[in-house]
Length: 188
Image (cartoon, rainbow, N blue to C red; front, side):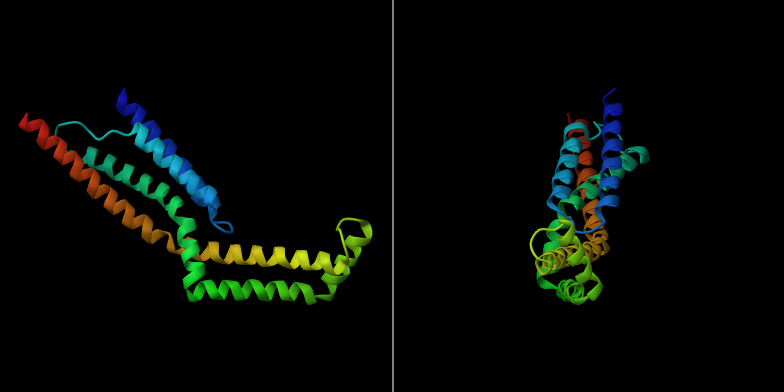
């Protein structure tokens, strides 16, 4: 019965991690993704148990690999906003994203069609203040959107590296702990 609960927790966590990673790739990675990753790791920690004493059969090793992969996906959700912040602050790609966002905002502000659109929005009462204030707010929003999309895309391209590393380390640790438990069981 315990193994069934473990498998259900593993499958549910895997599904949640895949869904979160699939939808998280749109735009900027935020701290809600990190909180989701922490919650998924807590579910795994609460329900998964290392196999008891006995031989590490191929099936048990496959289960350890599956748990390690799912834990790595969940941990990747935790790391994504941190990696994105690092990329934004320290890399050429981050500087390029900031430049792209500034250019997009500037292009929006000087676009005559957008200026006429701001005039219409203010005249209909859809935007507060003057047309130039509405256009300035729209440009700021455009800058945030372009920056978030650019940084999110770059971060998503690099997430495979920590995911693969975490999966490998997680499997090695789980395998070592299972062998250690088996050795203790055979000694007693």
